[in-house]
Image (cartoon, rainbow, N blue to C red; front, side, top):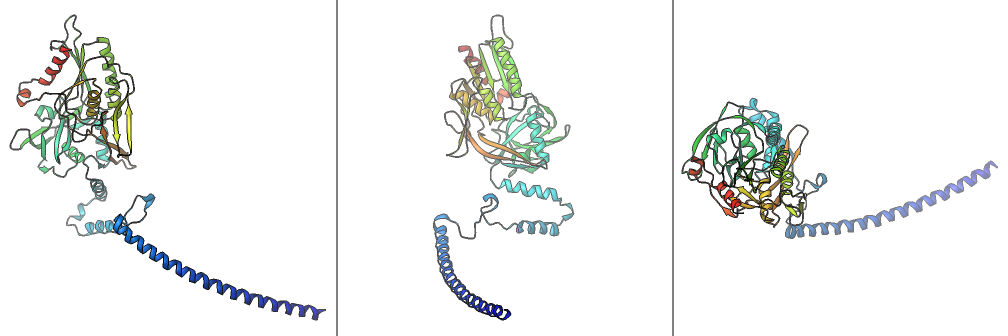
Length: 439
């Protein structure tokens, strides 16, 4: 029995070896076939890649290997960030005053340069200090000279001196060009950098090298900084004859002066509307002169008090992507004859309001061509208190006119001459009153 079992075991073992040998031969044949096929495939793929690369060079302007897919496809070009750290280390090792270098300032400086490479003066990186100052601007309280500035034809330009501030008292005017701040040339500065240098503690001085309109040479203006607290809306009533106050039986003309579209604007405007409805004036003068803008939503809310329906402004990101902002529909002021005053200091949100009133024929525009700041910025805040303000779109009036660069041209042009400022005259306001008297 033992022998029989052993013989059977040997016989089965032979069968296993034979089957194993056959399997090995088959496996080798399969590997040979696969290897040969893979070789053909790889060879063919190499030819395809080669031809694709040639087509990309000719048709797409891209070279295989130069461009790659980055994080979420954000990084399209193969960038070696080792170069950044090589420059960083070289600066820290070899700069003559290396002990004065500050890592945080270097880091923020690099981010500032990155954002500045967009070439747009309104797309800026703001470190935590600048971010706080920007927030103070919108709140309407800060320390400085009280002048809004912008970039026009690559030159730092005064958009608007705020009424009653050190800038206005010193004679700084809309359109003045600032070529230096405390002796530092402003060429190449962003708006936010310039604002940071002009601002400072109350009681301290800042020297601006300014070229005023009509002058042949610059002059230095020394301005003492102060605490700037600005209510964005002021109101008054004048008689139909033009004098302040109103005579008995004369409902007068209501003047609504808006200096900014800030945090307090909407609530102050609603108070003014209630006052207008109570007094029932013969007309409204909406004074948007030297108004540098502010919140988009506030401009739409204000325009909606004259325009009962339709597009107030179009936000154009590209030819394919546009957002239309519609009237909120209250239109409590739509039946009041209105004149809107504008000038070269009227910018951004004030241009949106003026453009909507003009296109819907809800107001007659009087004054001078506006600044032409019709781009949209979005603010992205980061964990360390810094932020980035990015231009994402441009604004179009309801009729489709681009506000950016071109600005809004008034229907009736009235210029303010130097002698008008010196003699404390306001021919633009006088013209507005004249128009409303005739209505």
